[in-house]
Image (cartoon, rainbow, N blue to C red; front, side, top):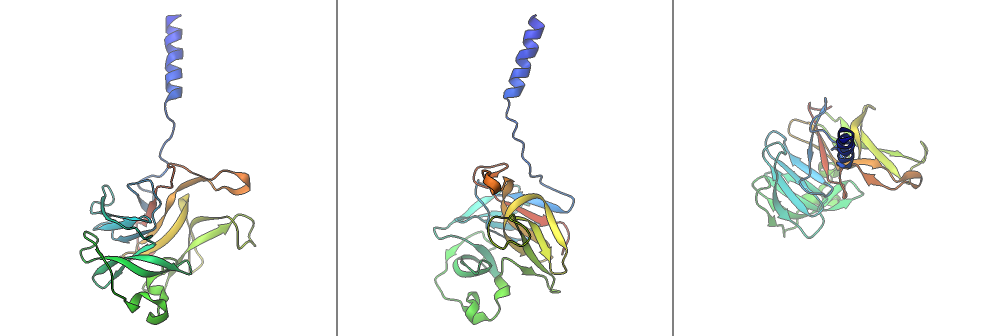
Length: 238
């Protein structure tokens, strides 16, 4: 009887243990992943996984020099951050998004790869699409390689193939040659970036477990507020 009681108690204790398991792996066959150090969505990434990485939430910037294993907060910004852009030897936070894809309005700048930041108070026409004549230079979606291969976030509307409005999912990206690349998990994707080796970086939220379609409650898989994730392709031009 005592043995049966102890066994039953053990089963009860095991059933009370948290069953939440992180669903995002640090590495997949074609991708590396990094995650935000805080429970906020990521808007943008800049740099190179093997050197220095800089990531931005809507209000903070973090920097890593060990492939995203540890992060240092380097900037707190009161105005919303939509992206990170490098122009010549200077890194900028951009506070505006034109037509949901073109970064405008520099907020802060760094001349040491994101280590230290200062407020940007000048006006630079390079960040004004109406003047610089080349919107694609600072596009977060799509992005284009040196040989004109383009990557665009794939939006799949849930109300059918003919739908162009309403709830949609972003399972991955589509190349300009028509090839579809789906990520290992479903995320809300925000931006794309190509590093100096033309590896593709895809920035988004935590994995999505429920899309909120058909009366369901929306939910992330591993966090409350959508802790951000970046996928980094293992090879150039995936």
